Length: 447
Image (cartoon, rainbow, N blue to C red):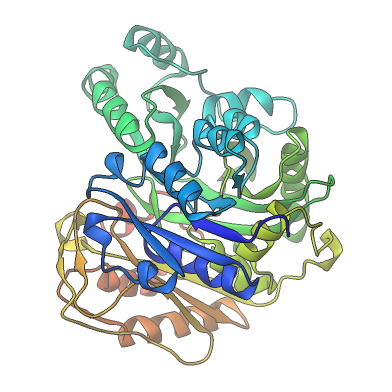
């Protein structure tokens, strides 16, 4: 390993996940936190912890100067960005390189190409089928013309986006006029980049993503797919692997294209190639690449037995991948439910407050990734994710039954959560038949 101390430039459950992986690799850890996160669990778990600013993300977790300064002051020689915040910011990766801090992820150049959603589409045009769309747009008049040519409805998306932020379905020209400045503001606030692009909206597709791992020696593999079709406002709520709709032939075909796409840019580390799958015509289209570890990576770990975060760190440390494509064997079925502090009966509006009591589920085939602790205050400054509940079963039915059991065991008092929604979803015929698309919530819960 080419480094010994890792600064985790993130918070919540992903910071804890990275700290645990570092400890297993015998690496020292440095946590950073905002004033609002002073008592958070990741702060207590790391060997060192430093405050980097006020509660606002722009003054703390998006504050590159404070993060780099803390890394240098603490003697860290590597930075893991987790997901969200600065994870797909090429400028941050570039600055890390300038200060000889190993950025645990792909190079700044690769993030610049693939993290920019519109540019990624251009780069992979001759390798993968692409959803019809535009190049990067900065001004509304350009968008008007392209939306007209594509035909409504269209999707407007943040060029540097991810995680469902900076995205809207546009049904007509008037909505484009009204929502364009709003989405630009969201993109600027979430990613520090106001640029957008347009994409033709496909009705009720599957959202399928392939997990990629690559090293610095030209070895690139995929670890199968995840079905992330259950979403609200383009943010995933339930993920599972493998997908019910992919045949062995299709899985091999799309997986091969995903690897070719990654090879095109000499990708290193963990990443995902995301596709939209037209269930009726059995056609698939490249959507975008996420140049980071995903929130839903545990389902892949559960069915392959491969620790993605540790592999990500090993690769950044100069080691070769421990696995070849032939070593990747899919066993059983896994489902992840994101436990968000939101009220599903009020259009998933955020719920903040102090956690008065909580009780985590357990038993065979159950895993919980969380930062919950008694008395912690869930504030409105950050993502609403409280925990990730993951089940594994020998088949999909067992994974569903175990998940339902665990959801009923999971108790959180103090804030509203989406647990009741998950229970209803897993029991719904659309979910049980496995053919739900990205419009699952609208179709299943139209009332």
